[in-house]
Length: 143
Image: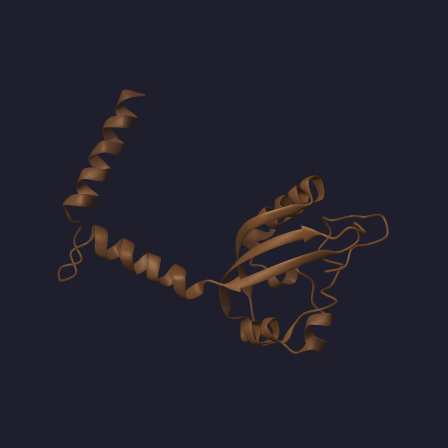
């Protein structure tokens, strides 16, 4: 990603990705030429736009952000969940971003959550979920 000369980190609608490696191209399905015409914000789902702006504010203030998850729009309007790390380069004009596709991990987490809280045969909530909801209800009633 390249920033403007005024060091504005927040405006992703105008500042495009200027370099990407072959692994990123494979992950997104885009060509180098397509990514040159695409901004970071355009590759984020709308629900993540505010979070992306907040993340960039943190990078500007601290110089880095170790872990940030967002849903990216890839080729043919498909989506992947990514984990990203950001480092503000010494020239304060560029950000190095390391991106990992964690879609499969998130899918497995969701499956484990279902198995942990719902009966696999009937799909009804199990004791663990019931117990958790009771504890939440008691905590809310006490407040």
